[in-house]
Length: 135
Image (cartoon, rainbow, N blue to C red; front, side, top):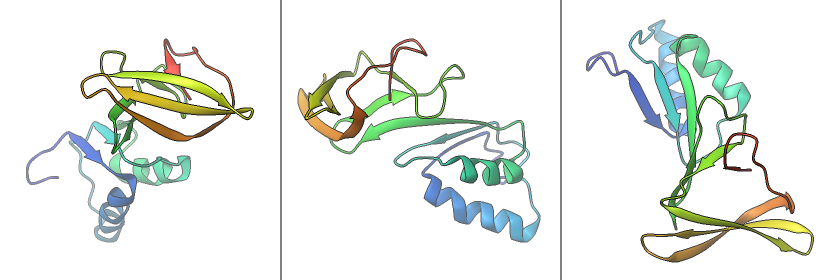
């Protein structure tokens, strides 16, 4: 990171963990990192707090919601709360379908027209607290 003066990280949280461990062990701090975008798995608040301690309070953390079947579904901006994402409406069609009282997120990649079924989303509902978002 410091060799190339990187200012953005695009990383899975589980891959960032060992990097942070090494930074903690050596006492080094990459001063240039301003944005950390996590992908592929959830970024838990406890991990974010640990990462922020090593990367600095000025580092902004955002996440991308994606699946291997349909690609990027949504992204977080500063207005989104934990677990909230803006839907990439140009890339994805998202539907919240009631399956036995549980919301099932169904997404379709608009470029490939391939639908994919996501994991249960809890009681069937929709959210619009950060523009158009999906939980």
